[in-house]
Length: 614
Image (cartoon, rainbow, N blue to C red; front, side, top):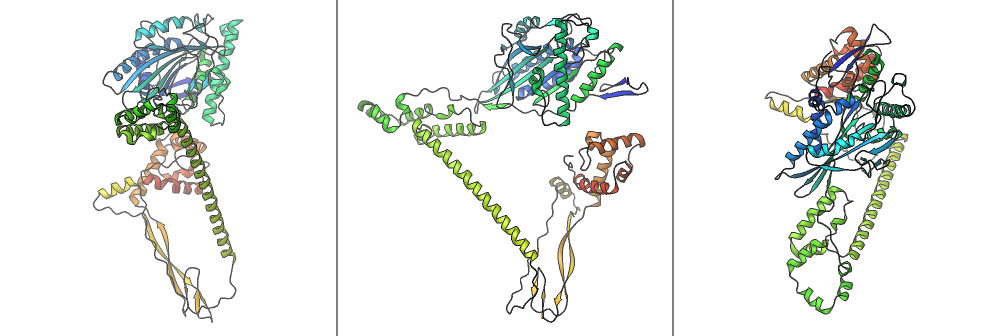
């Protein structure tokens, strides 16, 4: 239909059509450059920020996935174009004088019949997929080749591509019998302090196509390969459905493919799915299946983050002698009298340099990066001050272990004190609750006047005005603007007089002599909103009801997935809403629900803020 949507006949009902909305749609006249520049090239910049990205080609067998990823010498595909641009970016960002030094490595593997095979090293066997402490997926033993130019990439990639398993079927003479994954890593190291490190990974994935063995005519080995491919793609669909439904367990481990794509689906990567479809009539069911899968993956939410850490060995390796590892008394006994005299005559500068060599920070690579950065800055500060800061960081090993043990004991003591404080606070709150219940249950039957009682009147509370910061700035800019949000409204209350006793009694105020009933004004707060702000909020809700999609409507309070679909369906049947109150005409929304909907949304939208999660 246009650059973002397509329409296909519904095979269940020929009088209806199926409509799909995507980020981009490329027809038969689109070129390889159009696909690359429109969808793939924008995500390469994230690699230089230390974030991950992935590009997946999905579709039935024979639909052109390998052509999209590899292309031809005349029309290169996604992989050669992405590598050429990525190497150019790293050369520009890693040039002399720039703050970061960059290096690029590549790995190439395939998943054939649930086996992970290294295409750069055909002698390696089945590799395992692991997960590190940060949740990143890695493959120990996978070959990594450094590349600095596109010629280096071709020198490693072209022979590895010939190792990929392909076979002939009725539909394709060179059908991919495995899932191929090209992994490109971009490592960045900061040239100046604090010597940070970043790592960005790019996954370029050519998935094997789902096959109907009745049409492909697979037998023997081809039938076994087809079963493994369809099983892994079936698990891929289960993973997407589990992510969309918010299930507590996502079956990543049910397949090697989904385990490897854990970063790309619901993980920390910027992911692009290119769904290849075949427009021929006999591919109709495969096309509908591919479009439905692409529509489901569009709802998956990834959460990218920057993979940044401090360089673990900033100060370089340090070799300590036996005398340096001993404490001061043992070291004094170990060295002779001549060495002792020489040691006493050492200058202050030498002791400062020794303090740098004896720094223990290089052994703290497992520490939190922020804490390690602060310790490194402290190390440099103490080293610049000479011998005054040397004893702290050049403590011998034995004393250092004692200090670390003391620190751990102090931390445990602090935790115990905190727990004890929480227990005491909980006891005090429980005691207050019991006292308040006793006061409520206690009703005095005989009230005796007190001879001497002072009347205490509580001080009036100050009025509070709570407004959003943006609204205050906008209203303060106008000269005649008045801010009215909360208004103190007095409410009178009668105080009863006990007859014959000559005094009055109430829970708040007590007095000795009060012959006549008094009226005491109590403070209460009334919410008032400017009519302009109220109208502005109602207009925002009306615009969202008329123009927002089902996903946008779910951002409103009291509107869930079911009500959002009802609102969109009513809008398609009856046209746009003329006023907010028309929402009551939608089936399933009562007047009471309408009132709570307005209360929950009108103030937030009037203040120019988002209403919050649905």
